[in-house]
Amino acid sequence: MRVVVAEDHALLRDGLTRLLTAYGVEVALALDGTDGLAAALAREDIDAAILDVRLPPTFTDEGLRAAIAARAARPGFPVMVLSQYVEHLYARELLASGDGGVGYLLKDRVADAGDFVDSVRRVAAGGTVLDPEVVATLMSRRRIEPVERLTERERDVIALMAQGRSNAAIAGALFVSEKAVAKHINGIFTKLDLPVAGDDHRRVLAVLAWLKV
Image (cartoon, rainbow, N blue to C red):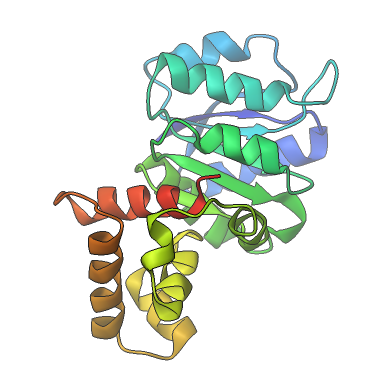
């Protein structure tokens, strides 16, 4: 897997590059801002991007805009966004396309290198990985939609799905069996009117429906 990293903080940029390389992810480019970023994200040999939301010159939303533009040009292009804070509007806009391949993690809460790289790989594979704090923020602002059909337990399950958890991890967090989790997930698919398709694709659609605001 070949990725582009855009992070203005030199130590963090170098740390991300070393970490990803150590786990077998090739960092094709590590940029300190938006110069050359659009061209890099358009390269067909780039599989995913890891971007800071705020990049020079204004340190507002340059990274996010670059991510959205890249996904407009290449629908579903995998992007992992790193942010210092929960940016509700940023997360909403990034998810608005309805495609998977999106990650949004808070920098201060990335504590395990292996988990981080696993999250990058899940996003590159088309999954959705969101920080629990981001999930909580988006859930508090979601509209009344078909998600209101979900039971309390199904909401627990889909909230954990939004964090990128596997069935086994969800089962462990809720102290239930994997079989029970699979049953809840099938119920979620039915209540959200998701068509029969690959389970991974439907998981992404379910999470996007749950988090849509």
